[in-house]
Image (cartoon, rainbow, N blue to C red):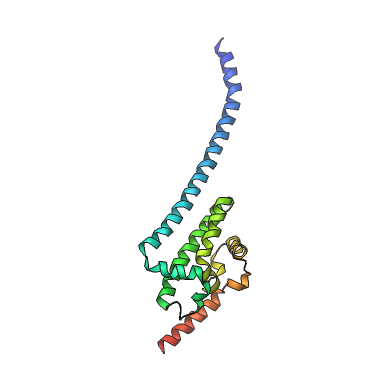
Length: 174
């Protein structure tokens, strides 16, 4: 075969080989993106659990509020200091759950993980200062569906929240 024939064969073969290369590259990109998203979700949960290990003083309050979420609304049952610690832990935990829901919520296993963890912070959602506008609307809807709540049951308006905080500060300073 002379070089012209080889050039024709190479030209003909280059199109399907190029197309196959693009398909494999696209599949590899999608696969790697999914693996990275799963890894990020797993690491996020691990980092959150690490907070519990590093701060064992939070465990008693967490356990109490898991069993009786309404105790968060009773200052006789949860001290201001415990409330502040729990609130900070809950804000971190809910941020982790939102990230997982937004990035992996299309997978049933991750949705179930997020749903299970929501019960850890049910007290903060129901009785804390949960500002829905700070979170992804789909995640807020998932919370409402999972915990069987209407938005009015747990969403706090940012302006109302800030006004209440200002009133509390004024009472403390007087």
